[in-house]
Image (cartoon, rainbow, N blue to C red; front, side):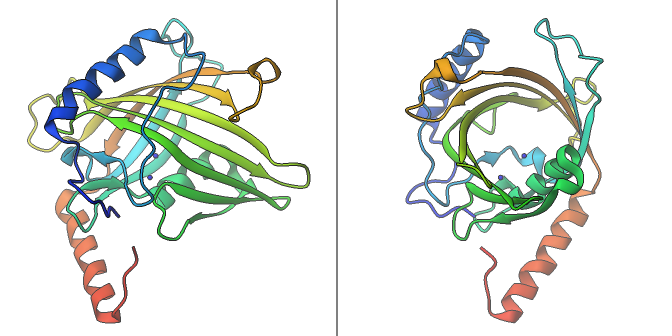
Length: 253
């Protein structure tokens, strides 16, 4: 799906939430007429995307490809993988980016994916090593999110992807706008066990590259996250890991 060290609060300030929500809702209304990437603020090296508390845990994800009218594309099989969200040292819920990237990569690429590495001290940059001596470098270069306390949580991320291989590097940008909310069947549950997600995605050429020479591709997805791990078990596992790190005198962030 993806360690905060900020000069200010890790969660968006209240004054910014209304403006962020309006901007992201306007961006959604403009879909699919996204000719250029949204002007998203660039995150700092250790500034992660913070999720609502009900994301914490291990989830099974099913992703469905949608047609332009919002119906499921029956010609594309569902994509299934795991996703994990955990608390960092600031008690914010963030995605386990290496785990999530590896899970999605294995579901999409199978044996072509060799490994996924988190860039040191950069939560927004991952390196995926692929077969045939290829390296896929993914960096978040823009991000905006709404309040994590809202009933529906929105985030918009722009990533720069660079594929290194035998030929010259290939660059592209991908913008993904996501809306997350508890599924309607569990609106008042104490612990959210299912999350319903809608995603809108657009690809763009590399900065400075003429759009006429690049085939832009728009995509739309519907995802369902189903909880696999009890929250108490999740926190116990994280506590054990923290104790192990302290005993070793190290820090995995």
